[in-house]
Length: 213
Image 1 (cartoon, one colour):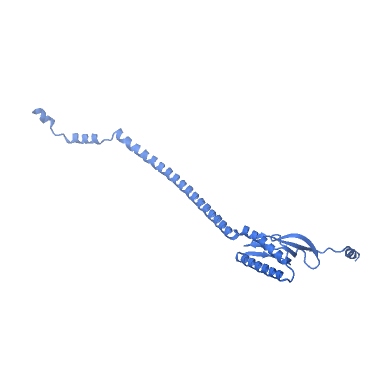
Image 2 (cartoon, rainbow, N blue to C red; image 1 turned 90 degrees about the horizontal axis):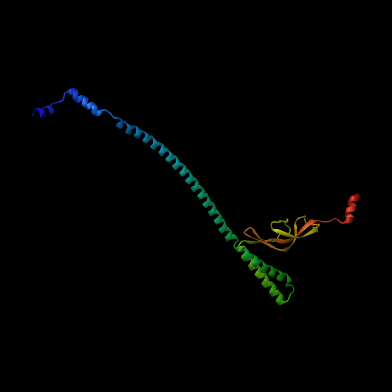
């Protein structure tokens, strides 16, 4: 009985204070997690900053790639549109060239159809009508004739077959056309075959007179 009473005797105030202080005193084990958590937080911030920089670099690379892709697509679109326009404008070039040979034959036949007999007259009238129909069709599809008599020789549209002296025409002008040329929407189908004027050669006697003078 006396033993139980001694075990339940109230502690003094000083003993209680000492016990509380002992319990609340930090230990080495309590301090280490705090230091470790601070280092971990620092490492996490640095990792996040590095990830952010990498993400920004990747975003810039993706943006540059997207801009380049858009530019390439725009250029491809322009090339395709140009090809379509060219095909629409010049798709008839081969067919038109074949028609030119037929037209040439008609014109040669018309030049050869001389005489006043009824058959010749009918042949000439038929050829003239057919040539007019050709010209109408050519105009519809923007095929223009190059017939440069009296014009200055243009190597882009004319092909010089002969250089001929002329006392009346200016040098480098077209005196005669062997075969007319044609252009389709501004593009040359066939050059005009022409005779080009050159300066008139002075006779030998004239040259001697000029020297004596």
